[in-house]
Image (cartoon, rainbow, N blue to C red; front, side, top):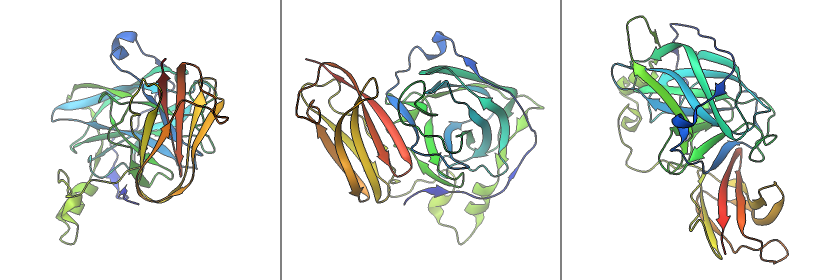
Amino acid sequence: MSMQIKRAGALVLAILLVVGGTAASDEDTSGVTIAGSIGLDVALENSCIAAWVPLGEGLALSGVTWYNNDGTMAFPEVLVQGGFSSQGATTVDALQVATNVGGPSSGWGQLNFGQTITTDNEGVYVIFRIPAGAVAAADGAGGGPAIGYTASGAGCTGWLSADGEDWMQIQPSFHLAVLPTIVKARPGMAVKSNSSGAQRAEDPLADPSDAPGSKPEVAVKVTGLEPASPNPFNPTTTLRFSLAAEADVKLAIFSIRGEMVRQLVSERLGQGSHAAVWDGKDSRGHTVASGVYLARLVAGPLEMTQRLMLVK
């Protein structure tokens, strides 16, 4: 599996605590279209989902607005960690900025940190810890803890970890629906930095492609569900997905009420790109009615949903 792994120590200069989240204003989120939600099929003790927030010189992060899936469940904590875009997050010595963070079901939540945070790294990761044992199974209330994603470029690059140590980048064509609140840095702000990037870059035995700002010669292999094409569609649409490593895969179509309409894939597949076509029919071969449907991909621990529109 081609994952960016990072386990080095970091310097913690402040401990912040903010409880809960609030609803975000429509003005903040009106231009963002949600394509679906992403979470873990079954979360482990330290499972996390992280949003990468680049911070230029003189900038700081004071909070985030995110598209929340299930308002009946809360994220036990939210952490901030300095780092580099090419290496993924780490929870080692990460800065706790909130506990028991919740938001509305299928709506935008807003979290304001108690103190703004800056870094002398390339940026920071905002890490949502997922409740152990939680299952992301559907969109909306009762569907499990997950964060929305977009296919339009709005939001942040996303990373996912089953154990808080090994991280996998989410399909680059998608972004987590996490909108950072960025302000000017001022003296006295909390500084969250992670030294591992610099240490690895100076290590004569380190792979040069691991250095901050370097560009690998080959694309990082990731697991993810790509945008369906066409969408809206009539009568067929193609669902393409990629696997970073061999995995047990299930790809199915559900009604907006969560009822399974058609199982498209249920088998173990190898690393690489795959595709499945849905012809707008259910498991009995009957053509379904026009409307919104959900495509759900489960590949190993990863779960993603995507909205499909059948028009006639």
